[in-house]
Length: 508
Image 1 (cartoon, rainbow, N blue to C red):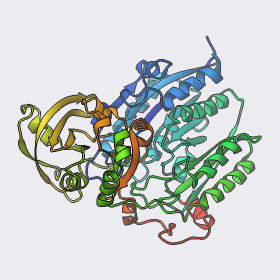
Image 2: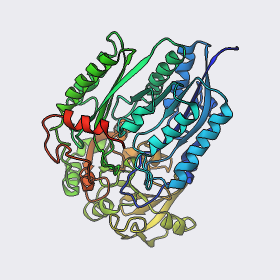
Image 3: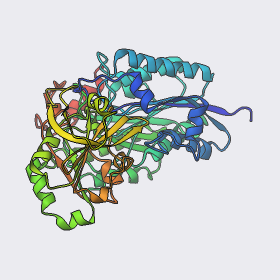
């Protein structure tokens, strides 16, 4: 069909932890997800698998469906590049520029387009580049020009800046935590872009930056603290003239002086309405600024809770989040502190625990099954936060994972330690079940996941415990940073407006 509008879509996405000593490279994307061209469109079409092993349908699939449903044959989806890596340390400068160059090459090969959509995270880090996603957006904007509609979606833990906002026509975020709306977020972005290129709407965006971090209770959208805020966003979109609303609660481990929450409201051609509604959303979000995150039990307290819950253990397992080494928040995955305590203090409990140690995996890959051997776990990538732990055990299983590389089950007493070459992203149960580990038989399953495990382990999980030892994803670790001014609650503030005005006017 001739005369159709053409809208391009792609992704550069990683949640980076600025405090990790391990740098991310393009190889980390290749291992996980690096797709472009016709294959990307096939993966994002109905029946495809967008991100193999991780998500069948994510933002780009939602975007493609919105093009089909809203465009109704008048709009064509044009695939560019999709790059996603497991959360980790900041990108090298070379990696950032290679990904940008690949995206620009895909855009050039695509020919003229009438609009562009990118799925970013909002917490991408890069050595020496203070706002790497703004660098990505600027490169795209320079290529397409100032008048081509440009829409971007983010994780709700993204860090918003004036540069990011100035470069796009609309920005949207997930509206669930744990995240379960990847598909609908892409669809929201797609509907905005398609309707814009067809001339049906004229998006006007207003945003605010709130000087607060680390608060809001659990920040789970279904829990009482945040539920009114998320319900307000769903409700306001039903008001005349309002197209979309988003809240960003920032990633605490992104070393930026501009740390803070943000709000966005998009209307159809009505900037004053967008400004009024974003102020309302900001006032509502500001009301949770004094609700602290929940206090985490010590390992001893957590072990005692598990021991005292015999019925729950018979009916399932306890999921114990290693809150000081959350791979889903960019930690290395090699912190041995919790594992060491479990081996010492809970030898009677059946424990499954992940740990990253490529050197030991290499050492044991050809070692005979069920033959005891002494190894030293951890202390290699980040010795300061991940002390070495000598153990004696035996290899019982091996497995090759498409993204995590070689995996070994190393049994030490009642503990099955899953050793991996790459960061052990454990938010889905198949991390363990693919190795033949039966979750029904475990008293404790250690996960290095902050929120997603609550969704995926529902079938087995009878108790969620967040345990802090010491590491780079401790909830107060971000306070080691230097900020561009007062941030609540480090320095109590009564009003968000003065700091918002300063920050949005600043050149970042």
